[in-house]
Every structure is written in C-alpha cells, then in structure tokens.
Length: 122
Image (cartoon, rainbow, N blue to C red; front, side, top):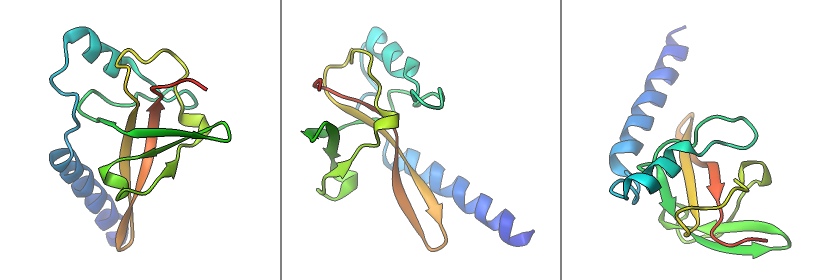
C-alpha cells in the first residue's frame, strides 16, 4: 500500500514538474488556433491531446509510410511516431506538432507520445 502511494505521488510530482519545465511553444497563439489545439483528440482513445501549452513543434520525416520526429526532448534522436496516435484531420497550425508526456517508472521516466499532428501528408 505504501509503495503504491509513493508511486502515485511520484507520478503526480513528475507530471507537475514536466508541465512547469516544458510549457510548450503554442501558449500564446491566436484564439482560433488555440481552439484547434484544445480540440485535438487521440484518434484511438478519443482522449484529449491536451492544450496548446502541451504541444511542441518537431522536425518531421516520413520513412516507409511512417512519421518520424525529433525535437529537444528526444535529445536530437529521431523517434518513430506510433500510427495509432496520428491525427489525420488537417493541421490548422501548419507545422508538425507532438503532444508528449513522461511515463514514470521505478528509477526513471520515459518519454511517450500522446498525439501527433503531421505538418506534411503521406
């Protein structure tokens, strides 16, 4: 029980810290674009991607029909975007955007992608 509470606490602290340290680049966009960010949902789970403060600009590459991205959180390494999180609706922002979070594991945290809105089409 105590271990479970500790894991929940650490998860909440990590999530709060990530939001403070990584506020996203889109927090001050015009209202229409801000609404677009807030309306985005994971295409598989239908869970909101979050808000404009949680989306981050990424470099995009397309390899063998799959999206790959890199940005400061990947340490400059290219990471494949899972197909099930790619939003296929038009990107109002125009630039590729990823919504990410950190999954807390014992002794570490792992960068995960929640949603992805491509800047270019396949």
